[in-house]
Length: 330
Image (cartoon, helix red, strand yellow):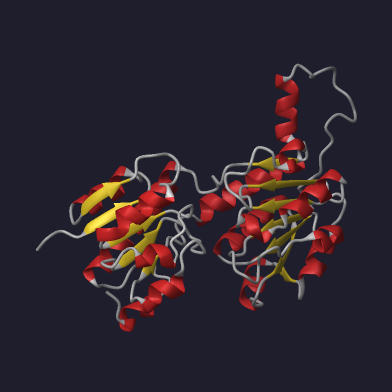
């Protein structure tokens, strides 16, 4: 049999590429940035499998351009960049990579929280700019983490991992999620808040861990930011669209909240003229919460396994739409 053809939209871990090369004919986009739209549309014309990243928009246009496509796999835990409904209509299973990045992302959320609370990035910039003068009692005052209240919005895998880390800081942990999780409350000592405003009013630190959906778009807006403490810190390692970025800028500028730290933006990469970049009370990192060598390798390997399973007509280890195979397709 002829080996299936696979297109990969970025170079991924060698271990994953080696797995795929044993079973498929590969074409890989070698650039650091995503392939241009016209390149993506051209490359998918004759492929059986597509391995993409969250920066690639896989919509009906792409799926229509790929009549032979039998499987899509994304190296991401989120999949809002893929039109799953359109893929399911075509009988195309969509794989994703949950679980493998949980602890790494939770670590990074805490790194952002600590850095923003104690103004570490500002302190580093101050030193590099030659502004380190004598010790002063009011220089770069931050906020204590130990004994504070953490509010977790979205108690999935990553949100729970973040909540567990709060134990070491003797924090009170509140959470708000679509469903109340009484077993987790008993096991982990976290407290349910019935609505988001209640959590926002009480939390010293708010960490966001919800998926990007129409319901969660701008979940945190002007009214929500105004409900937070003036000393509060907002941390976002979920998706940029979960926060109204203009409202966040205004809240930080006006000191409605003390600080924010975000690994994501509504438009990525964030434009250099975005007003958030003019503020010193926000930390913005380039979507690197899962960026450890071990985790990115695990993500790539799982994405490869998903794709290979889909090409063989077998259940993917992690599939967004497992019923796709029953809907027909190419």
